Amino acid sequence: MAKEGPNWDGLLKWSIANSDGTAPTRNLSEEDRKWFMEAMQAQTIDVVKRMKEITLVMQTPEEVLKEQGVTAADIEDLLEELQEHVESIDMANALIRHNKSGITAFRLANGYAALKDALTSENVRFQRKALNLIHYLLHENNSDCNIVNELGFPRMFMHLASSEDSDVREAALRSLLELAHNTKDRSVEDSEKMKQLLQERINNISLMSAEDLGVVREERQLVDSLWSSCFNEPSSLREKGLLVLPGEDNPPPDVASKYFESPLRSSTVNPSSNNDSKKEKRETPLLLGSGPSSADSNNAVSSNREADARSRTDAR
Image (tube, rainbow, N blue to C red):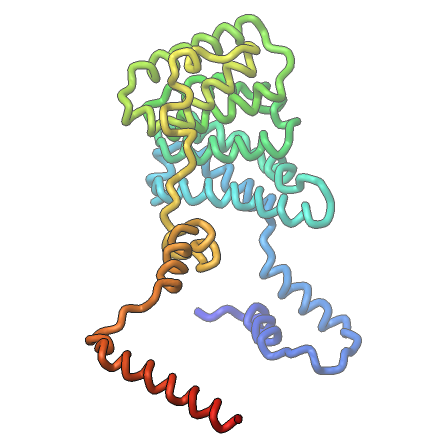
C-alpha cells in the first residue's frame, strides 16, 4: 500500500539534483519553509537517539535477540556504527570548536553500558571492537578515565589482557596504558594486581618461540611501557633481550627504489659506472683492415719534398 501524501524525500532529492544555483533567489513562503524543514528532518539522523537504540539492543538478552532474528554479525555492525557516530561528530566539531560532542552524545546514550555488555560477552569480535572504542574515548578525553574507573572497567581490562586472542590482549593492554598515564593515585592492591598481571605476561612471552615473538611485537612493547609507567623502571623484557629482537630495529628493505630510481640519483650513487664510461669514450677506436704499406709512405714523403723545392724556385 502506497504512503499517503506527497513524497517529501523524493521532492527534496529532485530539487537538489536539478538546481545549479543560477536561478535568482526569492523569499520562502511559510508553506515552503515548512516543507523544507520537514524534508531536511526526514534526511537527518538523531545521533543521540540512534546511540540509545544501539545501547538498548546491546543490553537485550541474547536469547531475545535470537528470537528476533538478530545475529552476531548484526551486533558487530552496531558496535562499528557506534564508534563511527562518536568519531564523526568529534571530527566535524573539531573544525569549529574544540569540544567533544560525540563523546557527550555517547554518554547521554548510556553507551558505556553497551560496551560493558560487549566486554563481558564470550564473542572475541565484540570484545575487540568494544576495547578499540573505549581506547578512543580515553585517548580523546582524559576525564573519561574517571568514568571508566568508577564503572569497574579496569578489572575487565586486566581479565582480557590474559585472553587467548592476541588482538584482545593488545587492545586491553592499550586501554590499561591509557588509564595508567592519566591515573595518579593507585592503591597498593591495584598496583600489586597490575604487577602480577604484567609478570604473567612476561613469563608467557619468555616461553614463546621466535616466530610467536615476532607476532606479539606490539604486546611486548605495551607490557614494557605499562610496567615503566606503573613502577618507574624498565621491565625484565629488556634484560632478557625480548623487547627488541635482532633485526626489528633495522629499517625495512628498500625494494621499490631500484624500480623507481631517477637517473640523476642513480648516477650519484654509482659514480664508478660514469668513470668507466668516460674512459671508454677517451680510448682511441680500433680500425679494422690493414694499414698503409711502407712503400706508399716513402713515396708520399718524397713527393712532399719535391713540392717544397718547386715552391722555393718559383719564389726566387
